[in-house]
Picture (cartoon, rainbow, N blue to C red):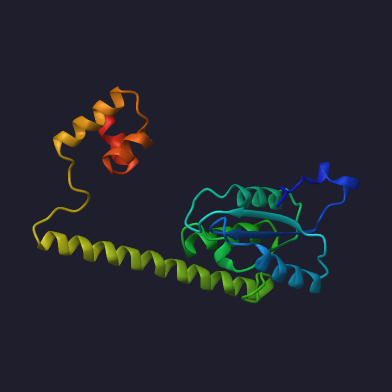
Length: 205
């Protein structure tokens, strides 16, 4: 999919009034299903020439440059509607992040439409849907905290400490030795099979 061209550089100065965001998780997946459903829904509302933003990334990835570019364009007032196939296409890390995107679009006076779910975040119904998302987001936070509290209590009852166990001194020395050889943090992480944050912590200490 070609990248979106800002309005000042569009041929003939024509500005699309609506945009669509599509996302697939792997290169093997196709955007065709999402695009076809969005095209049909947009045509019903009179939106024919959509500006398309698409990327191939996992829903759990924080890095979403095309979504960020779309949001920036919305805040510049370039679009009055944004179409998505389903709300989970906007998700970065669960309901809370979906809610953040939805509220940002509403604040920019941009209508968000989820075509397969039939969600239209306009007017009173939009406010109700946002409230429902907010409730679900809070439940997600509460459930996560409950799981952490239960896990911590179980470990403490077994006489074990909360958090990652300390690294053995031999492993720490190996990390430092690999760094001294000029290896990158990513390379060291893969070699010793520990997270990069752990490698960074050892080298910083």
